[in-house]
Length: 268
Image (cartoon, rainbow, N blue to C red):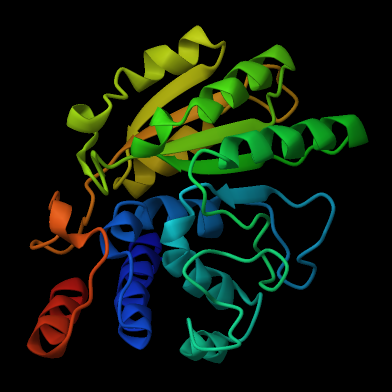
């Protein structure tokens, strides 16, 4: 499996689906494309034929506005027919701007309100522990999302209950909808903040697939008693020069020659 190709697939499908909708979250997906590729094609324990398998790994996209990049991956793995994505955001479609766990196989939580995902994952991880399951629960957050107080309540609870089966991945892409995270509400040093709550911390280049996989492999056994956080240093808009670290592309729409140029850049 060529994971770099799958990360490129996440980006090109995001551009394609955004054209169907007329607007979409390009840059927030582009920053986590390699993270999604490494997780779904190299790490998560899943069975598309059994989306409700009790011992599957759980994944919650707390930054739910990036769901447009997750949908093609789930289709590619066989959770549903890829042709269903052609209805993206159309009336009656299961596929909206944020994921719907009741309607989309492979989606574990209907995320969207920033800050909620880690709390949900604490509950999932704790439930797994009580059931005696060895599944892992993964949570993808944005660095701007760390300004939500509920994140830190969840971080405190995860350490208190010894949830070593919980892994948070922070997509530290440096930008939120209102500007640079460092200016709006500084999140760094992210590792130190989580460590202060009792988490084991790891930091990695979030666009380096080999480094991501090595970090996953180095995590303690699933039965440990300390939650894990991986801070992935990324670039919002990665892969498209006009979007990289630009505050203008949190939501956008490419049309005409701009669409063709970006697709050519991504597939070059």
